[in-house]
Image (spheres, rainbow, N blue to C red):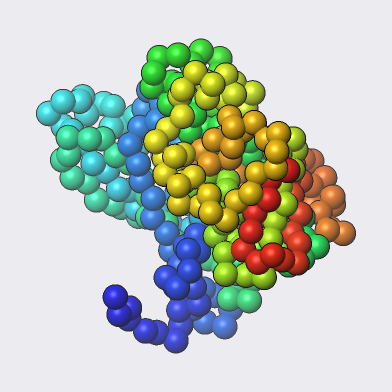
Length: 316
């Protein structure tokens, strides 16, 4: 496709960046993104919170501050009570208020399948954009939320997950990446992305593909919600994990002894996942300490960036 050209486009569709960026002035650029999906939890209010946290995440990942949003709604009005939609929207507004985001309107359609999300506009200084490329040899990788939401959500849909783990995973998914992003602003970040539908390895692949860098992940360091292993072992692995594995397995090498279940977890599609941050090794511990002080308690150094072989991920 021939895409429209504009000299003010700072981040476009050339690569798989988390959002687009358009320059307004020498001091201001806008970040634009959109995201919506079907319910992943039964509670309508919590679903609204999760959908909004997920949609805002791309702006945080690029070093920006979300400012305005518009609702995107598909609702089966003939099959569901309108009160359910109200609860979803109230949950979304709750999370927007927490983030300091103003709702300007939106659009709704009647659909057989319920869907909710946002289009979001954020602000960033043109010189302070953080992209998902730019990793350098010697960088450390920090992940700010644990993995497992796709597998556990599949178990929830299957009626297997306990009320306790449902509450735990909901708290993780509704947590904004705002505080992690604010701490990140204090450091010269090489690259950042948020871990969502492509899973940890899928999003990491976007950070290294077509570069001279490779990444070594330390499997034992990667934070995983403990119940994830139990549910994965009995087959509650979403189809998206297998699609992610099929698409990116050619650039991933697993060392002998890496549990096949762990391999599946690394491809597990996440909802409202954490930030994956690349930072110089001498600054990584300071960044990690600040993240934990700020309450981003699951933050962990999970890997190292090395000089070649280019575009490879090694899990050891």
